[in-house]
Amino acid sequence: MDKKEARRMKKEQRALEKAEREKKFRRAKSWQLAVYPLQSIGHNGFMFLMTLVSYYAAGIVGLGTVVASYVITGSRIFDGITDPLIALIVDKTKGKFGKVRILFALSYLTMGLSTVLLFYTNHLIADGFKLVYFILLYVIFIIGYTFSGIAGNIGNNILTNDPQQRPAVGGFSTIYTMLFYAVATVFLTMYLTGKYTYSDVELFHEMTIFTLIVAAVGYGLAIIAIRSKDRTENFGVGKNTAQVKVKDLWPMLKGNRPLQLFVLTMATDKLSLQVSGNAVVNVMLFGIVIGNYAMLGVTQSMATLPNLLVLFFGIRYAMRFGSKKGYVLSTWACIIGYSLLFLLLWIGDPTQIRMDNMGFMTIAFIFLFIVSGAVRFMSSSFVQPMLADIVDYNTYKTNRYAPGLVSSLYIFIDKTVSSLQQTVVGLLLAFIGFKTAFPDVDTPYSESLFWMAMFLNFGILIISWGLSLIAMKFYELDKERMTEIQEVLEERRNGHSGDLNVIAK
Image (cartoon, rainbow, N blue to C red; front, top):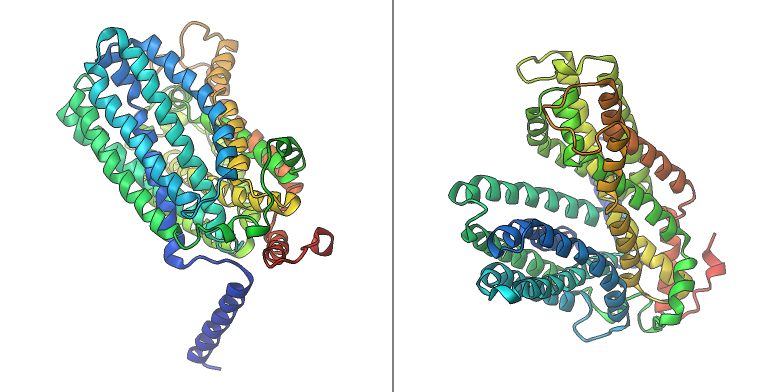
């Protein structure tokens, strides 16, 4: 058999496999898989804009740093409260325009209106009402941001139920988010701050306009991509889905073992990632241990292309073997990569790492740091497809379709745990003597600083990933299991009983 004939037969085999999966699953078209995740640009675009709000509130509105910090911190508590309440309302709502499209539209209008009023008018309000006005608009923004997060997770679930396609949604979303932050950072740091300072209100005006345009494109294209899927028959088991009631919440969540393991895994991962990415922790590694803080910017600027290449590999692997196996593989790669980084810095001489000394230490550090960071991005890309699987598992177990509630529970715990990152850093640094001030680039090197830098940068990550691998041993939702679950759900959509005991392991 010549190569041409072999290629023809392989192509025919792929076509047959695709046709078989079309019958078995609710698959998305390739353009939908690529376009729908653009909603992440709108979601992250508004959040990027609001990272500047403390500068605006303290410097231009005149609320002061302490008051602005209290309001922003308090909003996180409000955010945690609103997530499950809004999710419950959304899960109980059925309309002719579906759930996702109307929520994306509401998200854009709510966040767009609140940010325009905030950055364009808050400083013009009478002094006695500025704080109340700021809090009101910030609360409105939080509600819109909650709409957006819930809509995104529902869309991830209904776009496709094929275990082969779901990893692509998370992968594309991570890629778009990465590219957006790169572009937005350049726009802010090289263009806007070249024209203005943070004391100029025009900087916030132009950043708001930039965000409105980018978010409109992201949400608009996502609405187009999800339009054919955003229908009642695709929610859970269609018309046979039982209504979510308040009294069902605790039993439903208590009986979802994969959700419990997922939350444990992702929340500890998130906390450790935020600790290792803390600005003080970066200063300790690059500014004190290595003694060259500029190397942080160098390694980050070199990482974009490797991140994309590793993400594409991760997507392809997970599409073939499932999200669980993709996550486990990337987690093992993270452990190996960061363990090698630790050994390099422990055994070698970190002070040799600099761009004007391209010896073994510099080349090995840059390679390991970039590759390890790339597989860390790949690991994060599996959050969305795994959460979509858990939503279907919940429907399978309870016959209730509650994507908003399931995702809001994860988001609430995730936010609660991740909010501890500064506390963890502060307590550990106080333990080695930094009780009144954090170490900076002028802090002298010491053995205690070295070992604390190693623990905060690498040790806490390795421990977290080790716990995640243990949790994944008991996480049942691999590709084969999800195929079985989708078969049961399809039976129920068609009006059959779909007895769990028939197919369940």
